[in-house]
Amino acid sequence: MNGRVSSIRFSAYGQSDVGNVCEPNADAFTISEQLGLFIVSDGIGERKAGALISAMMIQALHLQIRAERLARKIESSLSSAAVSEGLVRAIGFVNDMLLDKTKGIPELKGVGATVVVAYYAEDGLMALAHLGNSRAYLLRHGYFERLTSDHISDKILCQTEQTGNQQKEKYPSGHTLTRHVGKEECVSADVASLPLEAGDRILLCTEGLTSMIKDREIGTILWETENRKSACQLLIARAKKEGGIDNITVLIVDVEDIRQRRRRKRIIVRRKIGRSFLILDKNQNSKEDLFSSF
Image (cartoon, rainbow, N blue to C red; front, side, top):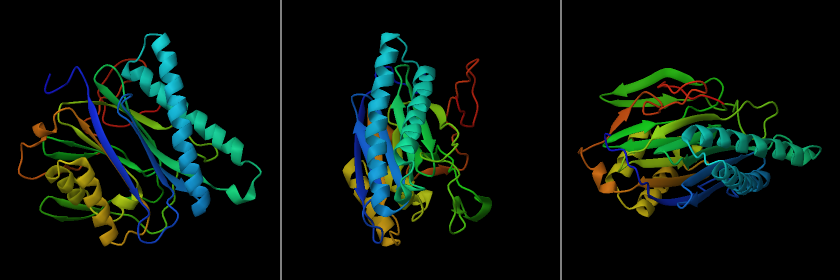
């Protein structure tokens, strides 16, 4: 089955840094290798409020996902479709809770959080959901692939610089998030399913990393640095060296034997976002290349 693994084991490490400019740290993350649950969030709004919101987001979402998992176990259904639907419900629940808690408090007006979640279903698939511009990436057999599309306005997709295989995406300054937790009338989180293979390395991170260094450099560090802690430290150090204008959070998840990753001398960055996804249609199982919302 092309490297697919029937018995999944995860090893993960995460690190968050305040960066060079923005204090306090408004990023947060959580790791549960046993559950196969990994979450990264970036608080939005006034710094102290943003730090509070992201921490609350992580805690509340973790608890809600555990509740969804318990309900699914009772129903004997932990398929990727069921887990994906549960993720969307859990994020929606936390969004409604946040709006309710901040209603009528002027100093909390406009606060919110981005979120990216990776959650394992018991059929060899990893469900990924996100809102905002925190991202997920996949490193597989020397190919480095971005899995999420940022929810921002005025994104310039086609304005690129290319040198050989290099590609640099440009964003206008002051871009605005179009979707995030805590936004009034926010649509559901995007969700997709990733078939896992032995040796996969998944990266979850905040904008503090991706706004500072290119995908090629991120992928190269992940490829050349087997130790997860060392890779996190290197990525954060590079982002800070390039300016570190935002908080930086990096979470690396390895699937089983990471030694199987070493098949190429250098990484190749795939330009197509989410190429490796298997999207489960609500009516029938089908392969597509875009995120879907339940």
